Length: 380
Image (tube, rainbow, N blue to C red; front, side):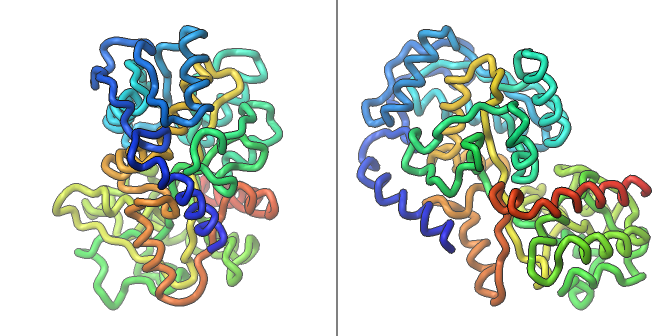
């Protein structure tokens, strides 16, 4: 709740700028090509952009930054379709004609490792903006791979509570884990009410889980779990696991290859194709939320445009674009469409555990847990 109040408090400052285009989501009012076929920073930004955003636009122009290179999994943030949408929002917001190039990349952990190696070698980063979960950014804090920067100067929408320890990244969206299921295979009475319900022998070989063990660490942060009990749970779950899948492959539940996914992105259900039999439930003992961040690698080729991209993603238009292509956003930002989902989870009673970089750093046992979970899953 404190996090929610902190973010909402910044909205008071933001509302004074709503009548004009702003660095928090307004269009700069200058024409630009949506396909980004021309490049550069020819147009002037709107006066209502924050002084810091205007400084970055000028710095990008001075440094000759005319394009942005992004690389992450095609299953993240809408993949190529999402990047095309973000390019349009970016250029409309800043009055620019910057081209954003997208290269499909590896998973969060693998890309983070690559960025560290490139920083140590003094090489240009493979992506100008790095996407990663709270756990990923907690592990990057002392690796000298990410630029430290005061993101709160960009926009009143970016509160201090959204910035990772060390000022190395900003929360872009929240995600709530759950048990995904095929309603054609799982009857109403068999929908898991508590997480341990998935240990029932009826699910043997019919459960998928994330190849990187996503979310087990987040749920373990709940008071009734803890790292040791969650590790024991995953070991007991292992015989029921029929396969490992990646984020974005949730359709393998709706096709009938698996009956359940433990644990998965609940927003994947909103993003499913029309008519796909895919639903989710959040067991009472698994109610939690984690955050995904964007930050700028220390050896980014286009650091000024990269920071402007982060600012754009937190803007009202950026959050709308994110939801349109990926069906998630930051639940605590004004205008959020997942805020209702979060409030509905809270209204059931009980607590909803929030896990961010600061939480991860205060609970190092969670990082050890996820390593242990991955070792267990490797045996599948």
